[in-house]
Image (cartoon, helix red, strand yellow):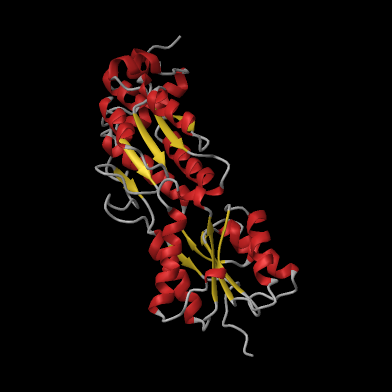
Length: 343
C-alpha cells in the first residue's frame, strides 16, 4: 500500500506539500497540486482525513441549517452550496428544522455544539441572541443567507426593491388595477420576506398615485396549487377584477397563470402576471420575473465561509458581493406581461 512518502517522492515535493495539496489546508501552487493529485491517483493513495483532521484541527465539514428542503429556493441553495463544497473537498451536514421550534432547539443546543463542524451556514433563519451566542461560544465561522444578522456575514437580496421594480414594470405598461399575491403570516416568522415584498408593491403604487385595493391583497402558501385557488376566486369576482398581478414567488405565478387560462382569459391580453425567483420553469410558462439565483447564493455562501476559514484563495469570492451589499438580481422579460386591453 502506498504511503504519503511514496506520493511525495513520485511528485517530487515534500510530504508537507502532499498533505496540503490533498487536504486543501494551506497554500500550494497549481503545478504542485496537480503533480500531487496525479501521483496519488497513479499510486492509489487516499489521504486519511481522520489523521488530517487531528493534525489540522479541521473536520472539513460545513453545516447548513434551513427550515425545509422541499421548496424550490432551498433545494437550489443546497445544490449550489453542495457543488461548491465538493469542488473544495469539503463534506456537508444538513440540519432541517422543519419549521418546528423543538427541531430548531435541538440543532442549536446540541447538534451544532458537537464540534464536528468547521463552520455554519444558516438559510432564511433569523437567529436569536442565545443562538448567536451558542455559535460564537464554539468559535465557528458563520454566514447567514437570506437576511441581515448583527455582526454576521450575510448574503441577501433586496426583497423590497425587487417587488417595487416588478410593480413599476406593470405600471409602466399602463396597468392601474394591480393585485398582489404574497405569503401567509406563517411565512413571516424569520426575515418577513412576504411582508417586505408587499411593502415594495405598495410603495410603487403610492409613488404612482395609485390606490391599493385591500380585496386584491391575497396570501397563499408559495405553492402552485394554493395560488391557483386564490387567483381563480379573485378573477371570478363579478364586481371587477385586476388587470395585473405580482406574485411573491414564481411557483405562485405559475398557479396564477393556470387559473387565468382555465377561466378563458388570455395572457397577457386579458391579464398580466409577474413573479419573483427565476424558476427554471419560468421560460416554459413565458413568465416575466425577477431572478434571484439561489444556487449562486449557495455558492457565494460557501465562498464567504472559505474566506473566513482562510482558504479563500485569490479568486474564491469572484462574483460574491461585499458583505454589506445585496446579492445581484436580474429582471427577465418574457410574454406574461403586456399593456392592459383597451376597453
